[in-house]
Length: 301
Image 1 (cartoon, rainbow, N blue to C red):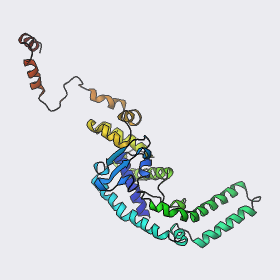
Image 2 (cartoon, one colour):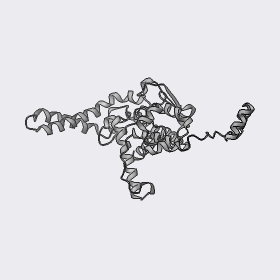
Image 3 (spheres, helix red, strand yellow):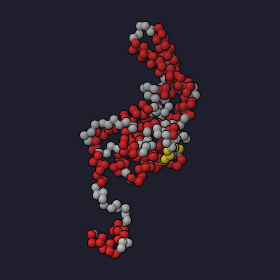
Image 4 (cartoon, rainbow, N blue to C red):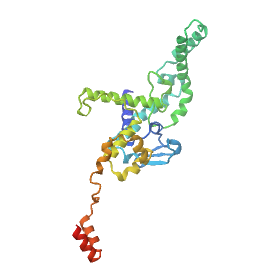
């Protein structure tokens, strides 16, 4: 399970880094609905699948490094596939399902009975905090048992990334990641990674503190990098992939310093070097002028 969680964290961070998708779009990636394995992992999002209500269609093979594509294959064919196969076997009976969630059926049902009785009979003697604590625990155990009824329909879905269960929320095992799950996963992963790099005295992190980078800030990071180093001819297509306009990118996400935004104005009055022979073009234009005007231009030059 620890290895599976590591794989999932890594792939989510990789997609955030190279695709800059919104977290909802990653959480809801579903094989056969929004993600198609043919033609280089094609993602098709309809208006109901994204914040801006656009139709979007692009290939991950055009955006992700080949190593990440290979790792996504391994994730879907090995780690996720084995987990889902095990879950579909476990859901056949209530006993095996509760055991799959990390509980014993007999002990769980006994705790539910005891907690229900305690809340009913000791309502007046228990303090308000104790009652709420007992009620939360009871609801959590009841959710574990009740999750068996919803599990078959959940397992029919083909979500790419999943909840694997933990100290809390075990009843949500096999469900897609929630907004809170996703944010906590990313923030923790980045904080732990940057802490380790700082401890190792990595030169890129010298003098820095560990980072608490939330999923949405990857859009700031990526758009700023594109403005600094990207090909302007690809900008419109880049923004179509991530689901906003170039104007919105400049207004909301571009983190470049004001001085960086003006440095390219140096020599703005010089002819644009597009690879053509500018001198030859000017000579040709001069030759098209009347003789007297041509002589005047040459004299001025």
